[in-house]
Length: 365
Ligand SMILES: [Ca+2]
View 1 (cartoon, protein in one colour):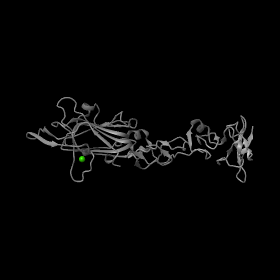
View 2 (cartoon, protein in one colour):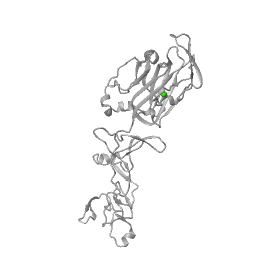
View 3 (cartoon, protein in one colour):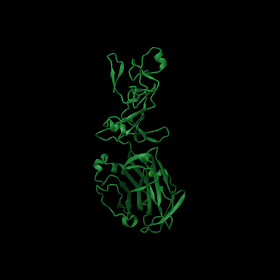
């Protein structure tokens, strides 16, 4: 997906040239070259079927810092696979950094470009990534006549062929915001100019969706499958907490599993202790049990109610009150126990079903 053309992307720039004449002195030309500029932020990412449109920075100060920032916010996490920047009017920078963030507050370098990496960024040009340190930003030389740069965040990373299985590389390409710092102009130039920025990525959905959709506010969210929920499918949906959430992989979708609440609730929570006790089979405990039931699986009648022997546990009349009893339904009093209804502490219970599907409880101590 070409994220830079998406409707939900927001682009901000710290400097822009509007209705102004820019004059600059190029060493190899006679005299000064001037042009009138009136650019917009949209010129950075618009489609250019015929006419090239360029974003142009304001005139840079003669003294002091010359940094201009471009910030792209996607509104949700994406996995970036490719970035291409086309410069305009030969006004490419001499030094620039691409930075990334997953919260819009903390930024880390993604890639450096400079005519002199060591002097400007204290990073060795080229550099090497090892398997032990795959997520460090590299610096590549930018040449004065280079009219575009391309950056693939997984390139040169040893685990890139198995990036699905590498949590650190997954984190490395995960961003919600990108920032491009143009730090120094080329010799003779007093502005920067870019005709197009292409950002290619896929929605980060933790292996539980193949596409993103827009919510009613126009924001991107994953089209979650495997009973997951959240904008990144980062959690199990309500009622599907019987196993812990896990990322979907090529070999295992790791779908969330519904809790068994005997049809008395559609809400549950995950409990690691229950999960361990069940030998990692089932860790959900039901909440908000209805129809006068309680228990991890809404399988017990709450105090003052009796187990109706004529109904299965999943029936809404499985637990009946005294009035129902007086009307002639003989119940089993299990108000004292939370272990399946055996009238007192310490009892175990077997649940059996008769040939005509009536459930009965067998208590033994
Ligand atoms: Ca353009």
